Image (cartoon, rainbow, N blue to C red; front, top):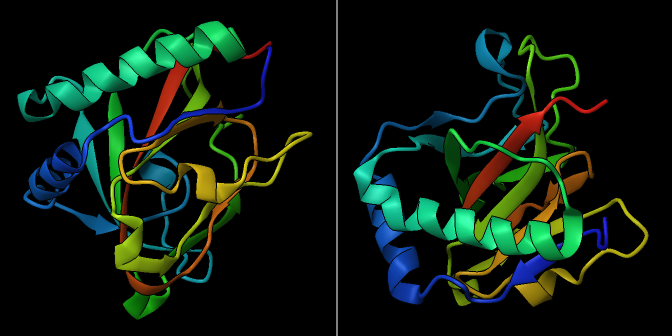
Amino acid sequence: MKGEWCYFKSYFSKQDCEEIIHLAKQLPSGRAGMGLGEDTYENDSYRRSNITFINDGDWRFKKLFDGLWETQRLANKDFFNFHVTKLDYIQFAEYNSSELGEYKEHHDVFWLNDDPEYHRKLSCVIQLSDPDTYEGGNLQITEGSTAPDPNEYRAQGSVIYFPSMFRHVAHPVTAGVRYSIAAWFEGPKWR
């Protein structure tokens, strides 16, 4: 690994971001939970947001998935060198100030998952909202030797990558609404 994080500032255009938000809001959504699969449970003291899962292969989001694979390839080549092989789905999230939407410090690897083959290896967050439309809500990486400045990747359309085992937090949104995409590239289990 040659780096602990990297980002692509404003990789997706304002129009791209608005289209993603519009299309994602047409899909079924629900309260964000903790855990994975059937073991998922709600915990509003730890995570407050609404989420929508978007599966790979949904033609309406082809440009988004293509952009994720392209930026992952570049990030992985230049910074991480992780063995990743799949991205089955992504998560659209809405953090609303009316409930101080947030996700307290966590990591994205389910170390004890029932999957015999895969772990999440490389996490990605896309900033979909115009930063002038909300306050608070910064994504902050809290692990590693040097954390990036959250203001550097707050610009609309920015994409940030970091190892899935790194702890990070989405701070409370204090005004407006923040929309984002989270994606997890998976590969053979860590050994």
